[in-house]
Image 1: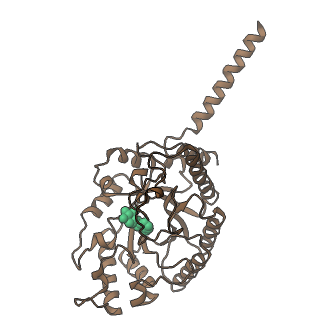
Image 2: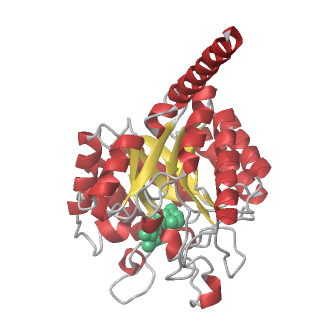
Image 3: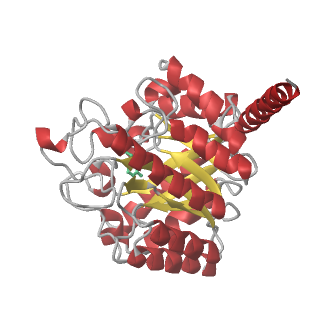
Length: 375
Ligand code: XIL
């Protein structure tokens, strides 16, 4: 009899211990779990910025402490025609960020993509001179950065200026101005808001050539006495690329160049790129074929598991280098919002984010939160 009582008593104790452990680790939110490690951010689309997507708003407010505009601060949105600035959506985005006390990122001041043609040509359609393009850059950057002075905390000043092999992307900015366009963009942004953090942002940053070129660029800007606060590693990842070890090499290399490292556009596609490309060049576009869309009816558990393991592996890496990483930002709230459903093939069904189409947190949210809380 005594033995039975003792046994039941120890069972109750064990149960209590287990539930205590669970409660201890049950984090109410990602931002609580990663507090004191790094900011955890998300990109917002216009439905979220204007409050139409109320279910997404709940997730944003609960889980994230930093926001970046997915599209409304790109040149095509802010200055679709020369001198005609449109700030409605961007104003609303910044108001939203301030109201919710979020660390606000402006994306992006200078990028070869989503920049209207007028930016580079004269009335006859010919490329403008170096001086004219510099003046257009100056005017755009100064107008935008001054408008949000003291409100936008950090800017992606230049996006995607370097190719995977480390050579310069032959964009209109590069072809007309030369590599100086990068220095000038940082100068103009700094003059407009001396306190704002300023970043260089790019994809495929785990590639050796790009890594080395970005390090050289950071040294060069710093050598000229310019402010560059951080390097953003767009995290458009796949299930089998890049290698975690290569990504780690880049975190270490950028940090050694004395800048903060940010993972700026995290998503992990479960789909193949028909071009086998591992980057995020948004000009890629392949015609839809049914066989390219294998998970239209749902994601098999086996693939969901691989996706989960990828997220765990990368968050393990981010936590390992938490003293070098200042922010990790997801590129979208739910799988339904993700640009990956439409790039590089329009109309596929992808599952790249932390929340599913029903606005439910995937199990990995709890796993990475616990990983962080256990550190
Ligand atoms: C993407 C947006 O998510 C899409 O909505 C838009 O149609 C194209 O651009 N690298 C970047 C981001 O820096 O601005 C891109 O965002 C994705 C790749």
